[in-house]
Length: 526
Ligand code: BG6
Image 1: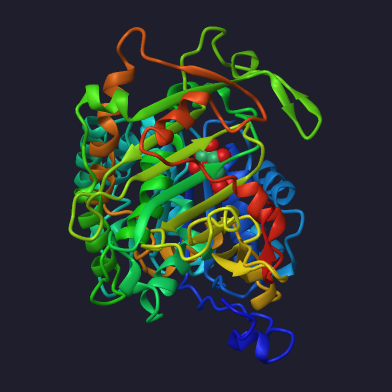
Image 2: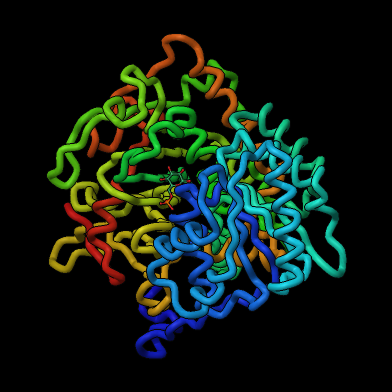
């Protein structure tokens, strides 16, 4: 946190070696192989893993999708998606196979079965399988069932493993998530199911655990006695891009809050796990989620503000409104912004408001958790000379400019006792020079390969997160449910300010803090 961090004392920081262990041989079957996610996230992550020497020589990919590509065309697409791939990756790609077929057609799975047998014989994949479901969610259950009926899955044993990686969204609400679980559990055991939330792969999200449980100074004050409020912000500058069709069926609650926000909240607010074992950490996350108050639909209306971006300006560029985006209905009621006021009902957090906001087309891309501490019981200094003093705030900056800062009051040099807030900063980029801020996929795919489920979401976590958000979905499905427009480039609808002002608080402006913090003691504007 201070300029005395061990890394700094050792001069210009260590460059981080690749710290991922070598993965065992395996065939990865990517369903949805011609899709956007495969090209943008999965293949680049695999290419980086290959070039870092993490992938085994007995690794291969079998792509499955409806697009009618040949093996050769698939390999060309793979090469285009991974222009930076090095020789190790290129050598592996040579053996990749592709199956063009429907997800509900037996032919697809007959072919898959014979490709997998061939991969074991020729490529040395040793019977290990990772099925990656990167398709539209409506076919997840269908694919799991077909894999099972075609003899492509079975319980793990000492000789081989069979795992399935499932993308989000996992269900559309509690009921559909439970139904999907039933379908998945008919083919796979829970320990074989790896539900991805790419936020869990972010180093800064994992660092929440390190910060809380490897330092003596934070835990004693990490509770209602010292913390007055918590704010979680997931702000994006981007709009829905080319995903209007998908986003129309999702909205910010399903797209960000049910998964990413709940995961970040769980790690920030949970009790200490008894070990780093995957299930011990997930047990604590579930307990925290269980303590989040579930409102009635009426209360949900009162505790939330939904917004949708209209035309505006970001960085001087004109931006169209959400309803003008491709594949979006001209009268769409989908929220691209959401603010919530949550409560955690347990001894540690009772009475501490937890504010959450997320939105597209906001002024900046910032994800952070800010914990604001209570004011001193009696302020010694004249309020006129301490008007620039803000309450102590600890900010966990998940992205960009990954780091942690602590705001506190300091005396401005001079005759008068003028107090102002300053910030003490820890920056990942400075402390760990050379470490890339990967997007999470590389780490998560690696973990699925080596069988470490710690960063994946267990069935009970997913269901509990849906239980929390379901009342909002119900409330908003009523005719006339509020939706407030906000101009692109603003911090969301005015009503969201009122949501926090009602309890005497206000939203932080993460941009001011971000611009002013440069890894050193920084002053805030008057
Ligand atoms: C995805 C959402 O899960 O997360 C996207 O579907 C969103 O809508 C993205 O843009 C944000 O991820 P990141 O890593 O850029 O914060």
